Length: 341
Image (cartoon, rainbow, N blue to C red; front, side, top):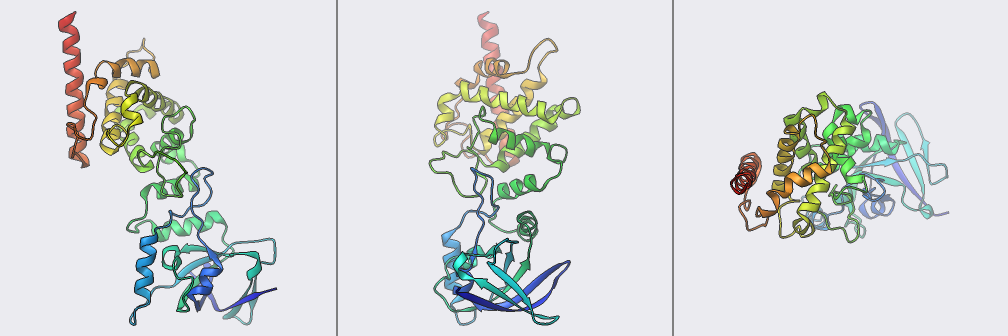
């Protein structure tokens, strides 16, 4: 059996037992892995690998005056003999790793620093948690990276969903966004960018964060969850987007040339959905058929293209302007109907 021995100091990081040590970058690279989120299965939690980010660190760390904070790993529990912790005394311990069984250190916070260092002997410091479960590991990752520049907010939202005990109560907008992402009836099914490994051939449109923030606006404007369950609200939002995908089929299927599925369009359309929901009379059913009929009166004539009236709009002010333009188009359509009656 081929063994790698990591000589470590045994101590604590707040309430968790950890190992501190030093090892060549190439060695740490060879025995560690990043658990990238697989958006098809929902397994994993790390963002997709950014080669440029990693190469930038490689160039930096080879400079004469370079340094870095400790790389952070976790030795996940295993039933085989892939790794053994040998305590030498109260403060010293060795980790014996069987290099033949594959990579055993989970990269909690270091995948981009370590990603392109496989051929380097530069010594680097590391801290390693001992025996965290995948869920506990994700919690640590979230704490470390919740404010990290460049980390996908949609990925952090997905983590929140995985870690939440009662997502329906805690964050109904995220619950509904994930419902739209996962329900096979939804036009958003497998179309949202979570920040993990991309699905082959996926024609992504918006991010999970964009959709859930737009849904939060809808919930605030309709106050629907005061009287109906989050599950019922999710069905109504689903029916609205199913109607959008039918009425605006051309715009939906050509996301590069239209803004229906981009940030400004998603926010504005969810505000229009709130208008339509609030207009429903007690005798009416708020479903896909209702939304489709209402949208067909005006939405098809509106210019949703990237060169249309929504071009260049962004931020809260841009959304307000976009909603105003769409509402004006709807009013004009109603006036034409009255005039022709």
